[in-house]
Length: 245
Ligand SMILES: Nc1ncnc2c1ncn2[C@@H]1O[C@H](COP(=O)(O)OP(=O)(O)OP(=O)(O)O)[C@@H](O)[C@H]1O
Ligand SMILES: [Mg+2]
Image (tube, rainbow, N blue to C red; front, top):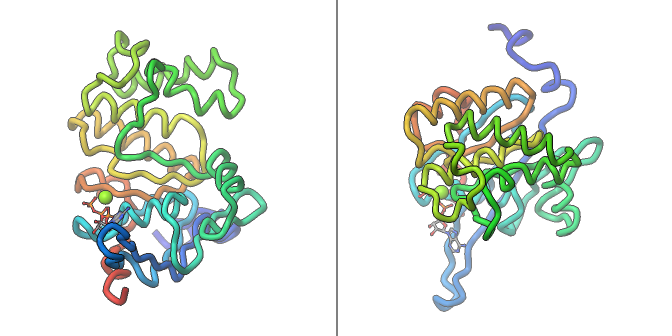
């Protein structure tokens, strides 16, 4: 493919949806006499609409930490994390908690490694909730949640039950459905297929491909080589950002 056909139009027109530059973070362990644990230094990369990029590197390299910095769960010591939010650009490293919440509601989704279960809420409602939050009528949101859970092979008898007692793989599928059901232009995923069997991994590959076609930019950690090779356009090696820290 030449450059003209391989690059989505919006890449050149709108610029990156995520731009990370000069990001540094050192954990200070107050319970360990202030021991300092540098994780990243001078981290920089860009992410464009319609592409899926993997954070790579060995265990402990700082992949999850970097993802949490982008989502605003971990503070950074230096640098900028610019996210395009409609006509505005928000620097996650500096923005207010209130603006960050709005950014997450409109633009930036996160599929965590584990489902944070909400007591007494059934799986179908857990999945439908982000859509209802977007203003989709309850009935339609529930129907779409059911379609997604069926696609992910979650047995219908489980739909009304709270996921607290589900198996690891069942919980992960509920988590993925909840994370993917609503449209967010930027999606962060931390090992979304770690507990899944081969058949369900393929379902997730299909869902990620659909998101990419819809112009969603995905930044994720994919330990599973098969999944990574199927969906990722490039890999950013986090160890490149580590040594100078
Ligand atoms: N909240 C925290 N407080 C202190 N240290 C932390 C914290 N979070 C992560 N770390 C440390 O930062 C380093 C990077 O951790 P991180 O979880 O980002 O690695 P990772 O690349 O995601 O590894 P894995 O592939 O095993 O998930 C580790 O040494 C970890 O102990
Ligand atoms: Mg991790």
